[in-house]
Image (cartoon, rainbow, N blue to C red; front, side):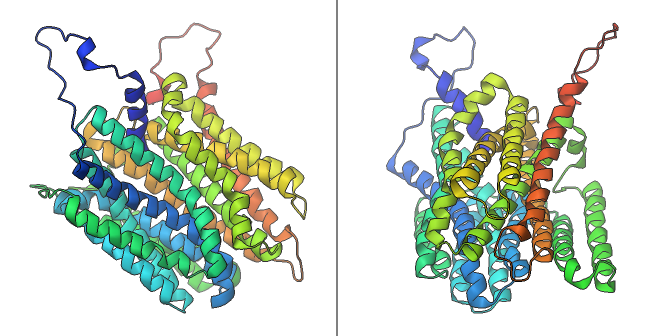
Length: 503
């Protein structure tokens, strides 16, 4: 999604009035600039509101986790499913969501998914059972898997290519980046009155967006041909859900327990079935040949490192600050806010930096910043991390790493890809981030649950988890440094070699 925004940053920066340049004879004239009518602004407002809600939901519920656990009697292991339920639902069907919009019609899919999101939010705010709450989170993730790619598709087909689309994409990007930061503050305020409000407040907002969408979003026709890869979607989502469940439950049940071993075998079989399916179906979710392109593979692995470490670290800090230090939800949200503010304010400028320095340098800078942040935390935290000396600098490092890394990774993941596969490449890297985050969080949760110290009141039980996210970030940095090392010229003359950027 953000790769289009990046290109728009450059276009907006370099665009000059068309009237000042006379096109050469025979050249094709650019389309006339689109008039921004009130209806057009209304369509953009609906799309931005839904993107804002998706980001808002993730951070608001994250703030509320300790309160949810206390009221419903959920363990750390169960709480991670409130996060992972959404993440796996979103990541597992993201690729299918974009394809479904093409086949059934963007307007119809977008409005239906938005309605499902609103209903799931309402049910989540009313239930008193942890399992049902997790189910509602999974359903909301499924809904987001359809609203997110469809919103971008509606935007790019409603606004003409050129200045109008560039302007719309820039506004769209700002709402996406600021939704997460706003969710931290709003989540802290709402949780102070009760965690259920973090589920209920999005309901009227989604309902308003739904009514406005029905009135404003233009009708479109479904694709004339094509098909779904339902088998691929089911095997991928089922395999990842089972893999996460196995990792989370194994410490209590035992890795050699028959149920654990059976789960490992079944998860592997489902994922293997996904790979077989993608090689055989006419319209696969993922054309596996795209994974033979070096920069694409590095971008997907970098997204796993970025999302996996960032989301898992925030999960641990949320539990530590509220459950151990007994901070209020609002105080905790304000404590983590600096990272979100950096993401919101820096994101609009990343496109220009990519244009000047390229994606590789920015991704390396991102992974370096993440590694330094986790390294600083490990070096200074001890058993009682001080906020000003340890937590605040760490959040600044992480915010900078996320701000520069996300957009750069998205750009690299789609660079050089044919227009017909831009949606595939963009969806693939987002899926990698969501699914990778779920797996890293599952392992972190297992380590934290296994490291609980009886009667302890410090940070000791979280050290193993921080060690893991640090290792994930360092591996992400190493993966991006290796191609640079391979580029070092050999002292002996050698024949020309292909550009490793595209190997």
